[in-house]
Image (tube, rainbow, N blue to C red; front, side):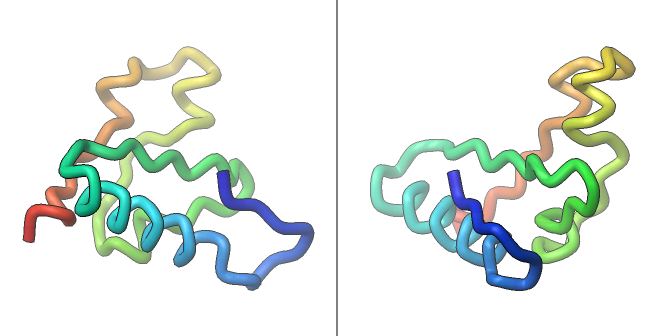
Length: 76
């Protein structure tokens, strides 16, 4: 988990870089969850569209498979 008390401190970028580094180092799939329910941004940094997110899953509106997006970032 990457967290801090204030906005704009680089949490999302740090989490993305950590996930990519872990995936490359251990050669396994890594699940990165953007748990910022107010202003999720990881999908924007990765340049991908996110139709559903954690809040929709927690409300029971979608299944977990609807929320998962395979990026293939570590394999490139």
